[in-house]
Length: 454
Image (cartoon, rainbow, N blue to C red; front, side, top):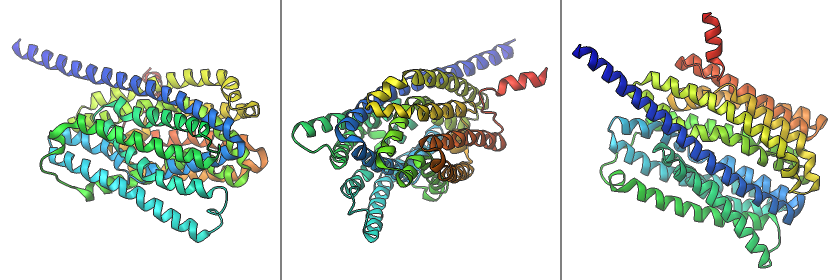
């Protein structure tokens, strides 16, 4: 009898912990989503103002430079931003505090150094090429090179905060504070007589990023406290980089995957057309934020659950995330398409031409959400090389489709290419996660399992 009570008590305690983890993940996801929606609101208003003030051509130049900052900035951390969510929760769970302190210090230094090196190498390559720096892109590119190290360091800070489940601290400074400051700085600059040009917009981005980094770093250091910052440090660079460099390659491919259509349109069409397409992608971000919120709230929890050996909790988290993301993505996607004529029209009457582009991109996001968090499992639990390989393959196919479809169909061709590759990439990630970890990630997997059992 006593043994039975002990087993029941242990089962009840385990169930309680599982419910606490799942409810915590749900609250974090909701918090992240709320902050990202608010940030998207700021970003949307900022983009509308810039498009209105700068005109289509200058706005297209700013969009192209910002895309390169994002692509290179996410990659400059050498994967250590995502690595923070993979290694730090596991080390905390195992009581390896010296490793945690080592990762904190080493990752910060490596991220800033990576951003500086990429900026210098990029500028040297462009100087050797000669023509681009002498074009209207020249000044915005040079200013963007100054933004890049700050962007990379802030990306690392976000990863550290996410690893501690501090969702708002991770997301609010880069996506709310930075966006709000960009908007305010651009308005102030124009009111003070600065020309409404892409170079001024990138200068405002530099100022806003610097302030947001300082604020986030100060808050993070205060919250981490002396125990996490003082004491012995152990560095496992071989282990960290063995995992993180493939993650960095995957991040670069993922960032490129998210922006390859805009980059290629810069070569294949006019700056004004790039501006039209970029406006549609900015509004589509409302839909993409659903997956981002869920990933920011649960990816590090996957790692912690695996380290504890809590396979039941891990499967439950995967199942809950898949269902929540599918439902929320479909709901937000429908609302975005309904509101699209109004949202696009605020950029200017000509931007309503981007409605078909936006609709196709939203369909791609909803279709990808069917397949669940396969990418998160491969990145967090092992399989990062496969994850990077899938993304690179889809990037190459997507770029090839853009080269074929854009001359034929115009902007809608780029949207069709990227929507198809987004869905196919998510399906491949789900297959990879099932093959390596034995976990079914699609939101509909339970339905088919029940049908099979019948």
